[in-house]
Image (cartoon, rainbow, N blue to C red; front, top):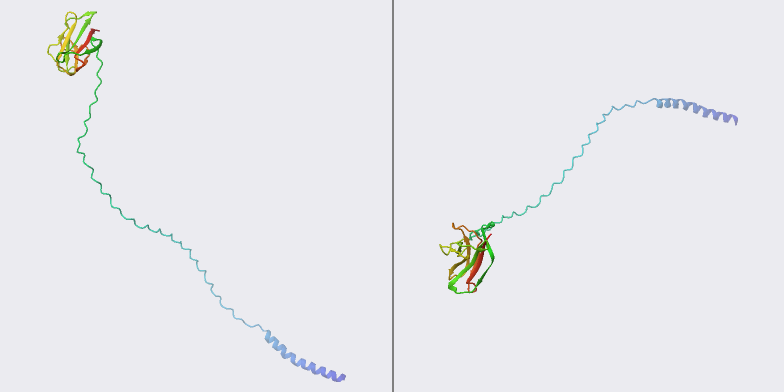
Length: 205
């Protein structure tokens, strides 16, 4: 048994030695470095430029719809004023206050009488007595055309009478000097059926 075992061991040993050599040779051969070809360097492509973002165009304004063109209004002809322009009346200037040598002595009065004997009477006094030869003029307007070329003189007592005949309406009397210049205020009488005989006295200032 021992021998059989040894033999068997040798057989295994021989087999093992026989098989070892070629295995080593194969192992060496398999352990030889293999030449791996280095691939040529590939060119790395340059990074492409990223295009800048384009500006977004602003939205265009929507044009307003055209409005209808209105025809200009035809002016209506103005009516022609056929009336003449109003006459501008001049503003009367105030009459300057005059200082006369003779003034009124009392207020005037008037009574009824005959229509054809309308007159004005009175007395003219100077220095508290009748003034002789003073002239009194009458007219249908203040300072207008006298009713007589010969003014009425006062008598020795200073009395006077100016006759108007058959007169109706407004009349005036006033005193004048020998040259016809006014020397007293105007006195107005309105003759009608209730006034036929007027009265007005004068005195020296």
